[in-house]
Amino acid sequence: MAETAEYSSDFKYDVEDEETLEVTTETASMADLTEACDKFAEGEPDPADYGVWVPGIPVLIQKGLDAVNCADWLNGLIIDGIVAGVGAVLGFVPQMLVLFILLAFLEACGYMARIAFVMDRIFRKFGLSGKSFIPILIGTGCGIPGVMASRTIENERDRRMTIMTTTFIPCGAKTPFIAMIAGAIFGGSAFVAVGAYFIGIAAIIISGIMLKKTKMFAGDPAPFVMELPAYHMPTVGNVLRSMWERGWSFIKKAGTIILLSTIVVWFTSYFGWVDGSFGMLTEDQMDASILAKIGKGICWIFAPLGWGNWQATVAAVTGLVAKENIVGTMGILYGGGDGTVYSALAAAFTSVSGMSFLIFNLLCAPCFAAMGAIKREMNNIKWFWFAIGYECGFAYIIALIVNQLGLLFTGSVNVIGLIFAVAAIALIIYMLARPYKEATKFKGSVKVNA
Image 1 (cartoon, rainbow, N blue to C red):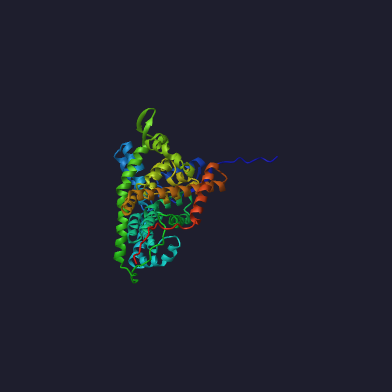
Image 2 (cartoon, helix red, strand yellow):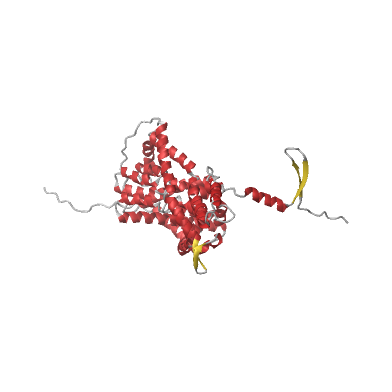
């Protein structure tokens, strides 16, 4: 009868002394190996949290705080709040600078006006003028100058429709958010990041066709008249100056608006009531925080979209202050525990709910600053609220359709949600296929005296 060899989890390895070159044989268990790996990784920051350019800053700050025996609440504010929130946004500065330098080159070489002329024939098929392309292209850098660029459109109906649809295109502030979702939930897929821009373009086209078939926006687009500048090679100084001005504006926003927002988010997420007493909470008590109570009160609204948890809801709401805030808020709310922000996001979202979350925040109302620009350009409070309501409603409907159809294909059907999604699809198809309305015209009779 053959004997079964006893399995051993111990491993033998040779160690060579660097000075004497003496070789000794050591024995280690699997537990020893695991402990060694944990010690090796201890204190190493997650590049996904703080960006590839500043991986050592959180560790240095933590060591400095430990050296001065910093209070727990202040240590949490600095590390879990300011560094995790603002650092998550600043980590995407290199990508932003690349976007800004390309936009600056297009503007400086004279191509911006020519591409508007080229796109005029295409845009007219969707009810827009070629001049609408300039605000959209500028909006890829920032929605505020994009909205303001609509002033070049003489036709009031076309101008208002351009203002309503310009912020659908992903601006520079949405770039960090797109990169985070693509990296955490979709394994860094480049198709998701590129697809975000195609989603924005599709939203503009669909909205242009639907709105143009209503009485408010009916009528042919205004004729395209624009002076085309000659092509010329821009100076390096002008391009770099434009890139720096836009980049510095982004950094200043991270140091002011986003900094204040992350402090508020950290305080409301790490303080709350437990057993009737108010105080600082541990990471496993965050469900009792002030922010959790606020988020739980409104998260049911987004449940049909697939992300009805309070963390995602709060991130979407803080994105209205500044779109970069979504990244900062997620860095705080999903950055606790033993894992990384990316691993926590991957566990919290499926691919379907992640895509729904991405689409909603891409298409919903822009940041407060861009809303202010929309209000100024509309010069009418009713038109302003109509524009904001349309953007939020359109974003909600598209995200609902994506989530419910995704659940259908993955086998997790929600009958009620699917019914609403099918009804929404039918409504969009009807709006796209119905005939154009007559423009509002003055009706009256003219008496001619012979």
